[in-house]
Image (tube, rainbow over all chains, first blue to last red; front, side, top):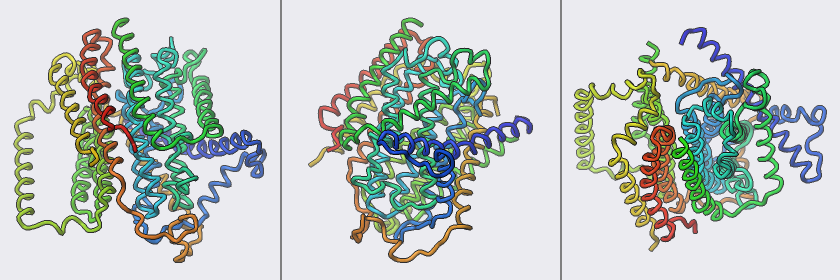
Length: 325
Length: 166
Length: 121
């Protein structure tokens, strides 16, 4: 790696890294707008035209508010915990192919690496909940961690189906192998398992027990204020973006689309953004319409329904690949 | 050059974190440093060209196993440090065992120079690390692989015994 | 360092820069935000009730058991990946090989289910 290469990579990283908070800001705005519409309200419409600058107002507010640390809290851990969630959630963007030739890096075990890094986000939540010394926080953190590890399994098994068909774990090559047929068509069962696990992994409704306001206050970040809360939010929404991007990349042809391979560049990026936005919209839509499930139902769904289903998917895809070659 | 520098960085992180694991007063902090130590090991693996092993190290060790430890820590909720229960006899035993392990590690490292470099040879032939690994496991070592499922099966039974309510 | 390893350097850089960004965001506020803690503000939030006892009580062992389950089945998933990459060249033989492996584990899974190992309550 020459210094020029290194500089170029550094530049790419900085662009993506600085775009993430802005994108997350717009995500929260979109969420509030769409939820507003679903509930027959306007949503935020005061800051800027149509409330488009609301995310900026939120950012300023998060920076200028008092950072409260509960009296009995473990101070060091309390401050580090939001970082433990935010950093892994953001780092996985290094592996996602945003367009033709538009990825920061591509490695042979890409998809496994991505899942591995994002699984580290659990610790911020569980340590944050523990450090707060609040009953709500601790319970929220524990629930969240148990939920995330339970759905990690079926998610991993759903990924096996994708790897089998693509014959590689590199995300760039997975996108390219879907030129003929999107994997969502070839293995709809795998996609359904991945989608449900993805929603559960990001602690979103209908699986948002970790922060169920009805019984846990605000869950693991009950005690967090100001930027600590901001970093948790950043990590959470980054995870949602990652999940949507993964659904696009692994099952819906990634940046592929009519004329994307020939024109490349902005066109392929456009397809990617379009598909990913759709999935982000579905995430928000579900929050507006679905009721929350009970915790034992959640665990039963993960271990008793999704696990056998994902094994069935593997059997189906393996038979197809092994026999057809 | 850069590889060597990175090696020393990862090695230092691994060792320093490992020392902090055993010297931390709070078990929760020990778990935190254990994650860091495992991540350092993952870095070392990847530096050797063992990408798959590196990813597994992060996913399985830093990801799942430490979560299990953290749940244990919270399940028992220790109020005072464990150190107080250490008798002189136990300390001597621990140092002895640790020293023995160190000797063993050095002995293996001295003898194993030949096979330690073997895994990266596949990369020169143009075949990826994972492809090669898969072929070795599923073509040459079929029996150990199938026996592994029996080991895991036993572990499942063990789990059920532990989890059985009185 | 070989070529494959170079691909990981951007991940490491990204990790470092992301951490730097997070720290900056935390530190940025120190300059502008107020700080006037008082004992009442520092009480953990419990919907208005005064908290009693230590929040870090013992938690139920089910969490631990499910974490152990995850470790067990994760090992199985890990082995599926190198197999999945090579399935095309391994062909029917590879398919049968994995079917036996998963079949044995499925036995354990069914046993676990039948004996209530997967129940949360």
